[in-house]
Image (cartoon, rainbow, N blue to C red; front, side, top):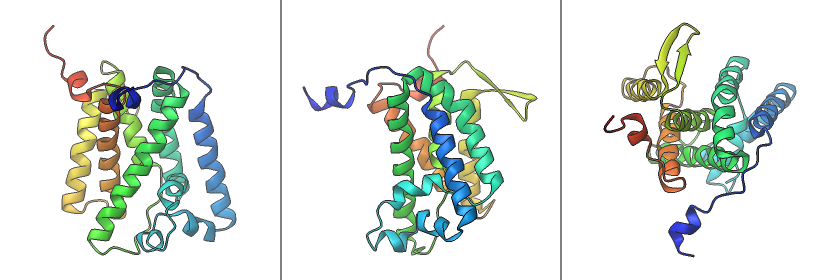
Length: 212
C-alpha cells in the first residue's frame, strides 16, 4: 500500500455521539478548574512550559476554558456543527479530525509565540478545533444556511469566509485583544489540509463549484 492510499484509508463507519462526549469532557474539565483554579494553569499551552518538556499541553489546552461564556459558545458551536460533521464522516474520523486540527493549531500558535518571544502566553480553549469543524461543515454542506443570531440567514461557505476576514483583520489591527486569532485561522488552515489530503475534499471547489 503506497503512502497516499495509507493516508486515505477509511475507518469503518460508526456513530457513537463523540460530539456529546467531547462536550461532556470540556464541561467536566471546566468544573474541575473552578474547584481548583491552579488546574487551569497546568492545562494551558504555555510556550515556556512546553520547552521544559510538557508537550502534552498541545493537547490539554483544547479542554480548558477561562469563563462560562468562553465554554458555552465553543460548546454551542461544537454541538450545532460537530453533530452534522460527525454523522457525515463517522465518529472515528470526526475524532481524528477534531483532535489533530486542534493539536496542530496549538503547535502552530506555539511556533508563532516562540518566534515572537511570547514565552509566557497562556493559550486555552477549543476554538482552533471548533473553527476546523466549522470549515468542515461548510465543505460538507455548502448549500446549508446558518441563521446568525437566529435571524440573519447566511450560507455556510460565506460564514466561513466572513470569519476568516474578521480573524485576519483582528490579528492585523489588534482587535479583541486576548483572543487567539492566529489559532482560529490555523484551525481553518489545518482543516483545509485534512479535508484535502485525508478525505480528497477541496473546500474551495465545494464553496465555488464550476458549471451548473
